Image 1 (cartoon, rainbow, N blue to C red):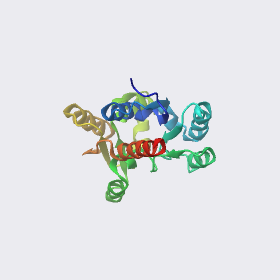
Image 2: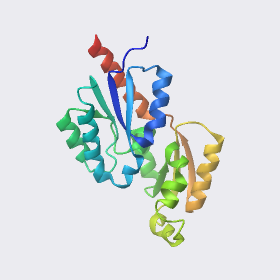
Image 3: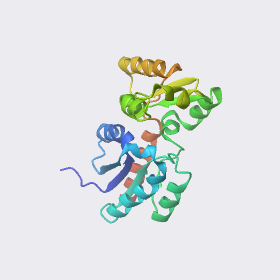
Length: 205
């Protein structure tokens, strides 16, 4: 009989598929996942309060809580909330950094500061979040307003896929940008969740 879940990961909806895949691959049956809408990235000022609400709702129902968000544009306000609530988060400024790894991401930024990044999630929802979300479908003149200062699109792929490469190239062409493909896997999302599970095992012992 599987052990009851005693750990909750409060995650950005953009990471849901990847976290569930890691959970299944590693047999982390003691871990539950509760996601907030990925669209919060369009309103990062709302992320800290939304995360706090989740924490307070589930405190006491789980022995351990962990937040699978980077800073994600909150300007440090998420860390203030987490310090007050006594909950840790994944390190990094955004998912691009923890997927690529801090050192690699720094190198990418130094090579071309005008880089637009996609992950598997953003590639899957490119039309909805980028083209429709920014109104480019209805107002094509907005394309150079949003992307005129970008030079390159880097697709940080979590899973290897020929179709993904094709769609990534297509997205870059759509935005008028050079294309670069990087297979990152789950990066520091994987290692962070492993560390959480190691701590849980230590606490249990």
